[in-house]
Image (cartoon, rainbow, N blue to C red):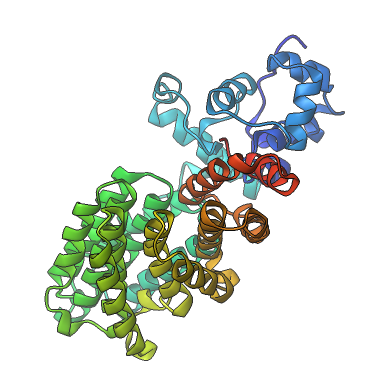
Length: 438
């Protein structure tokens, strides 16, 4: 064949391609593409290499994960193999994405779902399905369904940091918002509003993690509006904390401070855990601003509040904030000071506590704290220890589709590159290159 063939939807939604695409590694995707049973027999490496403007040797190295993947090359390879844009972990240039109108995108997703579940007649039947009607009266059953959906989204997100349920979750939010217009008792109406806010916040944080910042802004605004409308101070504090963290991550720590300070309105209504969370958020903002004393003051206040924490008093969305989370958040704040030569030992100890304390249910947090700890040690400590710490963090990171974690890996790669003459560091940078484009 002179060029890659046009392939049916069944090819791309098969388990083999799904697993390869989930690794965010183009070499593994190309290998899965070449060896897919659809072809009858594996495509020759030499032929696929010609399609991709590579030598057979270069493609072999790419498939084995020992060649770097640059974004410009990722785009070219994806376009050449005609990989559907919806399945990629990076965006194709606008002229290639925006020309897919909503109808075509809908048709692809509709077909993908049908093929993944039950091929054949169901494909025609899907078009006859109608949206779930909103009941005339909303009660406890609908409220619990929304809360359950919010908890499940948060759980999936914390464990894997990926947007696998994004479309389904957005549909849940749209349906939940429609419920707000239904009849309900005043108490049920307030609980419903809070549940919708909880759901919107949960999905908003997944959007933030995937750098879909416009979507995150919209979902956080909806969550905040719900919280303020029903007087849910606990949810309001959580949403504002997440908005602050997004602002800080996006390089605007002063906006982050503004959101965190706003969350302290009527702080007496918040639990000690919630106040600890807000103080750590402020500490992270001050650290980005290089304000050392203010950072330390906020960490001290966070520690004092956390010492008074009573988990049984916390709402559902605060169950994640345990010792590991507290140590990680304060450790991240101290990291910025430690890189500048201050409080490195304290930052190290707190990040290490986070890594050892997080369970598999919070794999993303464990990975991010581990990557941060390795970066800290790589910058101001022993590179061999840093490589050892990174080895454990990378085992978690390979299961994630978190753009925040990916950026932290790129920073670790940059720091490690200064010690490239050491075998264990060279191995580390190669492993990172196998996970993210650097």
